[in-house]
Image 1 (cartoon, helix red, strand yellow):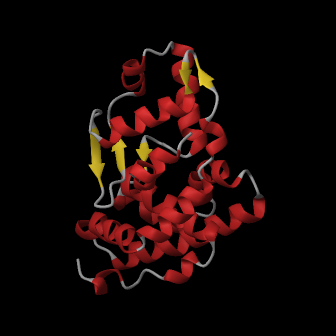
Image 2 (tube, helix red, strand yellow):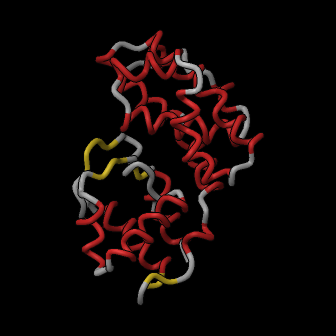
Image 3 (tube, helix red, strand yellow):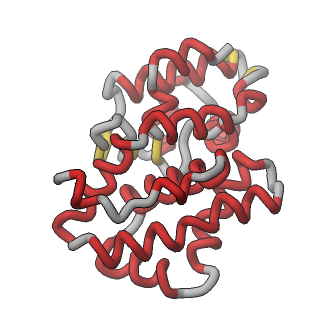
Length: 208
C-alpha cells in the first residue's frame, strides 16, 4: 500500500503520550479482535461503544486516572471513522499494518512507558515472576505457541488456549489464573494479543 493510501491518518491524533497509547491499543484491537464489515461501522457510530471496548485495557496502563483515560480514548473514534471512510475491506489489514510500521517508534515509546513493571515482580509458586515473564516472552517470540495473525512490526495474537499455554510452566490451576492476570496487568498480553514492543530483546532483558 502506498503512503498516500493511509494519508488520512493524522499524526495530530497522537498529540500526547496518552493519546498515542490510546491509538495504539485501538489499532491492535482493530487488527486482531474486530470484524471490519460489521464492527467498525458500529464502533464509529454508536455512542459509548468504543469507550466500553477500550476502557478496561487503557485503565490498566493509566491507573484509572480519568483525565488521562479521556485523553487516550478521545482520538479513537476519529481514527475508526477515518478508517471506515477511507479503507475498503480488502485493504483494511494492510492499512493498519502500514500505520503500525510508520509510527512504530511512537507507539513503542508510549506503550513501554506505561507497561506496569510493578506487576512483574514477586513470585508465583516456586517461580520468580520476572523470570517466568521473560520465558513466556521468549517462547512467544520463538513461535513455541500457535499464533494467528502477525503484523509486520511483530505484534501477534495467540491461538494456543491459556490452559494449554501455561501447562508448559508446570503451574497449578490457581497459579495459572494468577499468571494470566499478571500478564494482563503488566501490559504483556491483553485479549490474547501480544504487542510487538514487549517482544523486543531490549524489553525482555529489562524485566528484572
